[in-house]
Image (cartoon, rainbow, N blue to C red):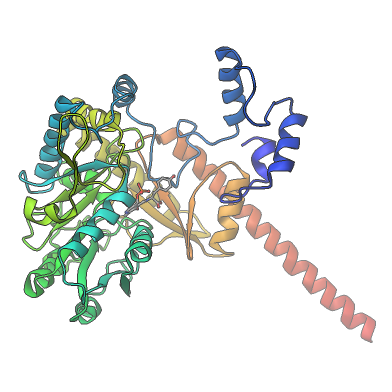
Length: 456
Ligand code: 0PR
């Protein structure tokens, strides 16, 4: 991190005037649209200079993001197809066919070669689409969504946009939704059920087989958010991490018991979100919504009459849509293949266990739950998670902060050197915290003594 960006808070947009002054003091012209365009090499150097303060995946300092450095081949294809707008399929019939094939491949990976769907901007759009489709398939007296309290905030956006009521169900110590309470939350106003295959905070997987049974019993729409898990779970077993049986309620005790089936092979599942731009190694933006069949998906279709190629339809929230993303996802699937994804997952899992074991052996820090996927939660035994996050950030490392713990995502861009480096910094940060605390304790002790002496 450069000195210039150190005081910048995420989400703090700052005030424009002082930002402009700051840029000018660094010799960077900033105010508005220049009347004459600047030469490309000059602007290119400016872009580099302006953005050099951002963290990069390749440095190994980003440990809390669910995105990664895209596969170079996927990035090249993206670049090659930049001009394509798949929102106008009449212009790009071949690309439209390629999207259908991509959906077929991803559907097969999720237990249903006949799935239909779209490549979208990411997990948020996919979850919004799922809730929209559930709404369109359900009478209007039913507007409640039952979901785990760990669900991603995109469902809060869906609720706000579509006037839905979210019934958030607590989770157990393994971060899986509590089934009895989930069952009790289902009622006459329930519109849809949501289960998560890879929670945002800890990568946990809900008991999806049981939830699918509830969906079947009550004829309810069930959406599975596998934005993260969709490109991990199908490869775990082949990577050497055998899947346990979630139906029997097997707990993840750290003895390599992994979650069971999460996908369309469960009859109750109506739709699935999975994000190529997370563990699928593609450039941003690339999410995917899969529906079990045309009957479910059909309700969210908008007919468009005037585009090239005549009447067409859209089933996404956005209109103009990146065709480059579609080509990049298709090309990644072809180039990386099952074995490539299996190897990526294996490497990420090995890194996860490497880090977990080293952190477990360290004093002053512990892991939150045994990892289910390549997501690790850690919390300090002294001081708060916020303090630890700040300490690490001051030393250049970015982790995600959740209530009471920090999230490390062991994404494909991380290697053993990065992790060794991080462990050293983690150790230093923890020691610094302990020292600061000891100093504070000594100070308050000597202040107290001083006070008592003065009183005598
Ligand atoms: N569902 C789940 C389970 C998620 O974890 C996320 C995002 C979404 C849906 C929404 O996906 P999009 O962000 O693609 O719309 N999970 C990450 C998170 O919130 C997103 C992320 C990725 C955030 C990279 C930061 C980052 O650097 O942590």
